[in-house]
Amino acid sequence: MSSRKSIPKFKPSIYKISVKPGRELAELEITGQKFGAPNKRIELCQKGLKVRSAKITYHQKNTVVEHEVIRINHLPTFEQVRLHTNSPLYPGNYQIVLEFSPYDADKLKQLEGGDLSSQALRELLPSFDKQAARIDAKIEITN
Image 1 (tube, helix red, strand yellow):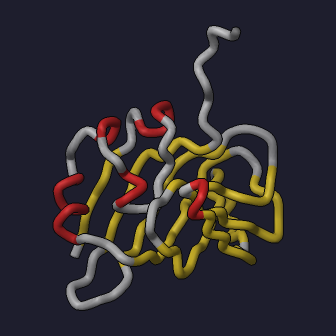
Image 2 (cartoon, helix red, strand yellow):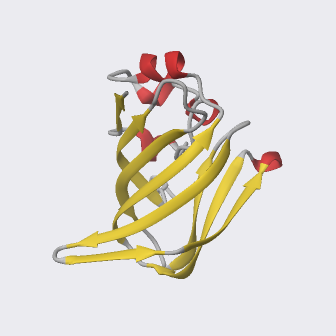
């Protein structure tokens, strides 16, 4: 058995949630770093949520590349949503913007500034659930 800690495939630094009163969808912007071999998908954990739209943007020095999300697969059995792109996603800095529903604005607001390691995030927002991916992540909420 290896003593190395499991490295997450994506390590978020910040979750920015925009909740508009009277709107059915919440907007979620996740900024973070992708690790590992290039592939054409990003997997997020979710339970009972529906991602309606997604945009993935790569940011490196003076380079900004938007990757077209060609398919959004919801896998309720695995409590996951997978975002598939038409081009490879290389390691580096990314911004993922999602619109999802349903959401509970009051519960989301309670997350702000709290310790995310003990929260059941997948029931509140599409997220990266592995402990190593959550350790330094922050949540910001705007109306």
